[in-house]
Image (cartoon, rainbow, N blue to C red):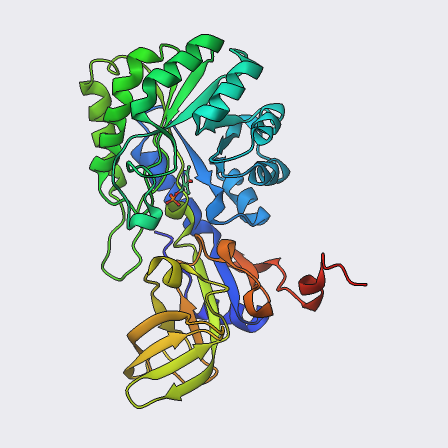
Length: 403
Ligand SMILES: *Cc1c(COP(=O)(O)O)cnc(C)c1O
């Protein structure tokens, strides 16, 4: 068990690199990856890191070094993956709502592609016919995931081609001889229940007779990790067992040697990350004691955007008596990180560590209020190193056209 970075390691990073700062723990990513690999060892499985969770090029290179593939959500992420050294065969582009020109670029780069609309599938068929094996994203009409904002497979979701439009897919495939190699679903994020993945597979299994050239079943990402103390992550061993059983039990799938793909984002990088902030102002208003930190929703938007819970520790005073605080940022907008949270007594200048900040943390950061984006630091083999400098004034002025 690699576990987590110690308070001493986090405090040392805050001291050396200043705050606010994102700190990532490389070996934690490896630990999560190895859990997946060992759980699915009996099946022909490949994992594609959904890199939109965290795209720092040094993290991408680390992910590559441990043998993981990569899943991209934009053509720019494909370019970043190539820049990080991933071979095209290890890159998957799962698109949605994109211009066809991005698919042309992805074909030129030689990466795997999952197409998410009939419109692009038709253009693809007309241009490439059977020459370029491709995947299609199916909307299975399943409700899954932590909340509606992160649920993507239900029957009003924009993602994927509704399974009810199978006849249209088939017509298009037949008209152009399209080589459908992959059927893909991704039903949401924060999915704890293994049965959701099996349910999705069952939907895909029903489609098998229509796609005789199929080689890959891609079940997307969305594995849950613990955010609150006492929560548990998706039981990956149980999931692997259930998936293996589902393959064996289904008449259309049993005996066929499909490759199984997954696209974990959060599962790989959520727990590796910490956002370290400094308490700038304590404000006792009688009913509520506010602790304001030198950060805000501009750096970590998940609490305000998804009502996400992020565990917080006062790593400067871990032995202090517990008191109740509402932790906020410094943005001119309500940016509550945690309301009525018991924490070890906070003094101005203390360092608060936000946990589970690896996935969708820095990646969703902005310069709102003309604040700088934080620095990023990677702890590897016990040593921290800067992997992105904090913004400076020049970054706020870059690209501005001044007379
Ligand atoms: C975001 C995304 C993922 C990763 O989701 P997590 O919840 O971070 O595991 C995987 N596949 C696709 C297509 C995605 O859009």
